[in-house]
Length: 455
Image (cartoon, rainbow, N blue to C red; front, top):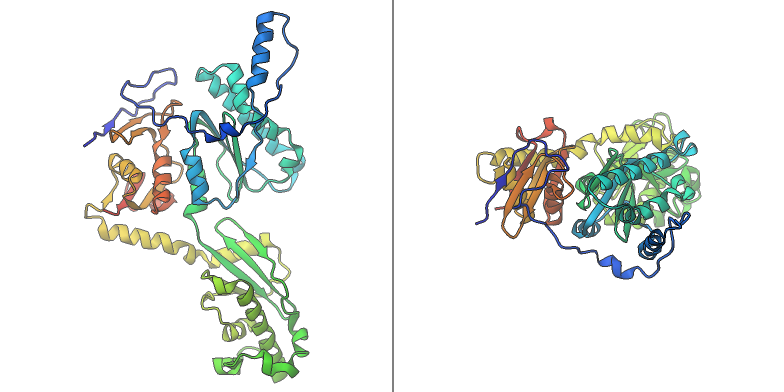
């Protein structure tokens, strides 16, 4: 058996040397370096007349990379997360920034200014860690290329994540706003990305009126419209279809589903009720053919009150949400509509956490649960955790040597250790466990980390 060694949590200055028994976790695994085919002369400036300075600048021009920043999908997958996790190098720079898609901040270049400040902060940290100016410029060049791309800063969303190392640069636009941070380590900081994978819940919102139907896809971070081609053209369009009702009504018919008596329509004549039913059934058919036959996500209905029961009666989709967003919403924009829909769907977003907390409570008196960091960190590495709970924003720095099973906890980042919470969360996700990053009052126990073990 290996041993677990917990060092004091007292602050360790960045000048202090690590204990001799702290291992270097990984060799360099930067496989992208072999793809660097071109070099160019950057940071040229005016060369010093001194011959030694001239030689130094020429050597620098030969070694600086021209690596083009590559965008990662905003809907990050476990495969991409695994690639980022496995990448290690002498120095890995991770930058997280809140950004803006529109408004004064875009017009006045606020996001670019903040990114420039982040690059300067990274430069200072790298200098403090003892790296020479030439190496720092080499590492940060892709970031400065992004900074000087004016068009790039007009295409932002709620957040930006950038991962830079020697000959390597990846970035992604985040759908949620991250805390502004710069991390320098031998691997990338991934915890702020985890919520993209740990909050998989989403739902559909269907806004219906007698004139049109619009579908939206929403998650914990926002909502976008889903364009469905060949949608029915309102109730008026269905009137021309009534002569062909035998081919448009399903074999079961709206009436056989209890749709013959539509409550709440008031003084409307039977023809109006039938037209509405035919129209909404055609909407449901088109959604089923285009999308919903492959889905299990809830469908929230939004519309004036009398339309909701009609749609329910003709719908073949088995996951129409019990509650509805009543009223006239067809002309509302997404910024107004999303908070209303999200509030109604709050119980849906809480279901998974509630079930996990109940499971933890049922097993809290057994060895299947733990709040012991010295047990949880190795268990996450070896894939033993089924459910992991972590307090939002927490960090614990140190190292874990998988060869000796030795855990060392330190007071702060030294540039050569790791965020152990970050690693535990990432490892749990990549080995099929569920992760919940929550406020402290939502934790199942009085701890910054808790876990349910598979075995």
